[in-house]
Length: 196
Image 1 (cartoon, rainbow, N blue to C red):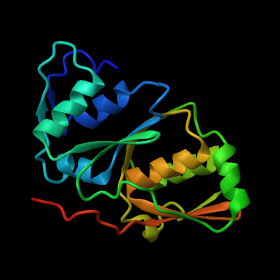
Image 2 (cartoon, helix red, strand yellow):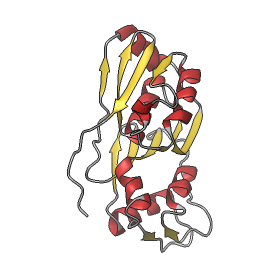
Image 3 (cartoon, rainbow, N blue to C red):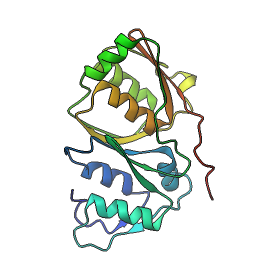
Image 4 (cartoon, rainbow, N blue to C red):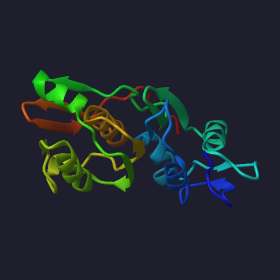
């Protein structure tokens, strides 16, 4: 997957966008997700930076450079590739209270292709409602979503359930599935305390 012409350095001004736009449909990985710890390395701590030495770098070259030259890590958690820091929980946390609704989400298609670059909950929630045809909570502009992280991921052919997991991992959220409704909450889990 070519990263794009002229990309020699990955930094806060270009890395997330360049990598997400480079991600292409394939048989193994359905989504490339920047988790909050990884985006914090760029936007909050301003310390993630990597130099690419190839003339025509690929997405794999970018991931390799980031893991060698920054605190960002890469983990494959089928069907996702997660870019994260040591503090990010790598498993989504979901509680199903209504199995028939969860079953519909597993069968329903989300979008053939999706790219969310630094999108807040007020943007994500209406997209989820429209595509998955059910109610979502919290509503836009609700204070319960103020501490959700901004979502950055690219995906191809996700099911509804996989879309919920991708949103959850990208925004550091947990979710519950009720009858015809999904509730999102902030995820307070920390896998490992961040090293400054």
